[in-house]
Length: 468
Image (cartoon, rainbow, N blue to C red; front, top):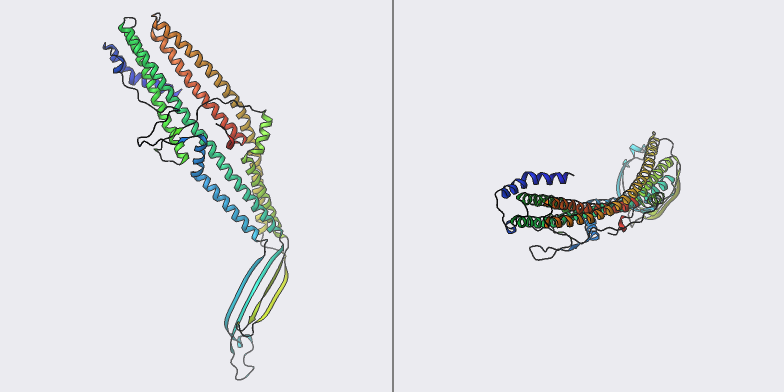
C-alpha cells in the first residue's frame, strides 16, 4: 500500500504538473520527444560489465555456498566445535595413565645442629655437603573415579552439541541466503514489470496523441495518458530502489564486494508442494529439527555434569609406581630403586564447595529441561503455521493468475473501444492500472509461495535439501 501511495504522490506532485503544462500549451509533440526509457536489469538477461568480462551466473546453491564460505558466524561455530573437542580431550585425560620422567641432580648442605645432631662428634663440622642424583619414571592411573567418568561423558555430549550447533548455523545461513536471493528475484521481476508497463503507457500516449491529431480524442485524453506514464516511471524508480537494497543484502551475506554484479539464474515459479497432516509433520520436525536436537543434547550434558558433581563425595582409587636410579652421581652409587602402591582418596569435608556446585548444576539442568520443552512447543507451532501459510500461498498464486488473465482481457476490450472512438482513454487507463496491479500481485504471490516453501523446509529441518 505504501508503495502505491508513494507512486501516486510522485505522479501527482512531480510528474503531473509537467505533463498538464505541456498538454495545455497545445504542444502535440510526437512520441520521439518524450524522455527516453532508462534500461534496467531484467531477469534472465545477462548484461556484461564495462570491462567486457561476463559475470558468473549465480544460482541459489552457488549463493549459499559462497555465503557459508565467508560467513563469520559459520567460522565462529566451527571454532566453538573445536573448543568443545579440546574440552573433551582434557576430560578424557583424567581417565588415562599419567606417565612422566624426572631427573634430579642436586648439591645439598645440611646443618646437623639444626637437626639436633651437632656436637656429638668432636672435630666434625655440623655442616655436611653432599651430592644426590635421581632419575626415574613415574606412573599414576585412576582405577575408580566416578566423578571423572561422568565429567568425561558430559564433555563428550557437549562436543556433540557443538557439532549440532555448527550444523544449525549453516542451516540458518542457508535459509537467510535463500530468502535474500528470493528478494532480489522479486525486485528484479518488479523492475521488469514496470518496464513493460512503461512501454504500454508510452504506446497509449502515442495513441492518444494520434487520436487527438485526428480529432478523435481531446487534450484531456493526452494528459491522462501522460499521468499514467508518470505513475509507471515512479513505480519503476521505487522498484529499482528495492532492487538495489535487495542486492546489497545478498552481497553482504555472500561476502562479495559492494559493486559486484549479480546475474541470478533462478526464477520465480510455482512449484506445488504436497504437505502431510499437521501431526505427522510435527512428529517429523521434532526428530529432524536441529534446534530440538541441540536443546536435548545440552540438557543431557547438564544432567551428566550434575552427576559428576554429585559423585565428588565418592571415594576414588589410584595406583602409582615409579622406577629409576638413585645415587650420588650418575656413575657413582647409582642403584635401581622403585615404589608402587594403591591410594584411596576419601573426601570428608571441603567447606561445602561440592554442595554449592551441586545446587548450581541442578538449577542448570532444570533450565535446560525447560528450554527443551519450549523449543518443542515452538517447533510444533512453526510447523502448524507453515502448513497453513503454504496452502494459503498456493491459493493466492492461483487467484493472482486468474486476475492477470481477466485484467488482460479487460485491457483488450478497453483498447478496442478507445480505438473505435466509442469511449475515451479513461477506460484504457483504468484497465491498464488494473492489469499492472494484477501483474504486481502475481509477482508478490509467487515470491510469497517460494518464501513459504523455504519456511516450510526450515520448519521441517530440511532446508539443506531445498530445491528451487
